[in-house]
Length: 300
Image (tube, rainbow, N blue to C red; front, side, top):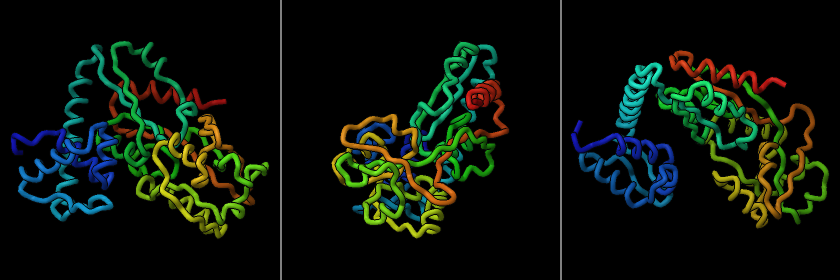
């Protein structure tokens, strides 16, 4: 490998690939866009190939970029594995155990087991990261994460997945909306509403599950791009920009100008679920203790 190419550039490249947009990738990486763009340009110059085609809506991978991506992911995964091996070799001296969580749910619904783990294993460091479910699954497979709380219906083939909870969706409405006067709101009442909805690329499995439900009841809303941050989403709803279907637990996020109403459904209801996912091959000595705490916490 060119000695001037480093793993940071590889991570930046993967972020841009997954977000398909420099601005979104910069936000995810917690840096500004100009240095991200410079690093990608420098990487392209060092490789002697163009990795992305830039356009107003974002970027697409070139043929060279598409060929480069799986190799970069393998390199990053191997680097993470090397770190893990070194940390596990410390034995009693401890290491790092990383858990992810899907940002779709409010954190309060997830089993809070970290204080117990810290008390049991004071020599270990525990990290927690919030991402989209498909990114969490990818991190587990790459060895960058030990376990994660993911949304149900996420494609997690190759991992062990255990359901933690399932809950209904509720309708988030502007407080002054006529539907806010109803005790429950049916899908038929939402036909003419602008609905904030997530992009399929963020979770194809759950998106397809919902679309199948929508097709079954002939629900074809006008969809708006849903912000990743739920505080921003509720702010837009308060401004009467649209409505949203959100997990019931997110009602814990209070926002003036927004009300929540249960969905009125006939037959099988649309639900959202949370699961813990992990690789059965993960040799971390902490994993069995983590799973035992999670399983105990979910019991009534």
